[in-house]
Image (cartoon, rainbow, N blue to C red; front, side):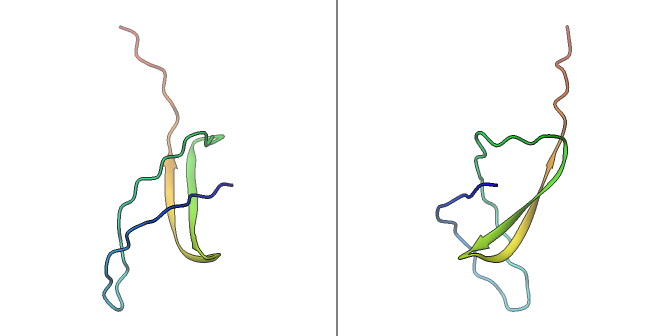
Length: 65
């Protein structure tokens, strides 16, 4: 497990509608043991606010010319 700190800009919301936004998170040094879906739980002050799924694909060998 790991934590990512920093500031994120959250767009204004509309009551009853889900807020969506895009953020880029650099995962240097994070190793995924096998291909598949990995779920990131978004916590703010130890309270879960949402989740994001990352689909990890296998690395295919480079084509030989």
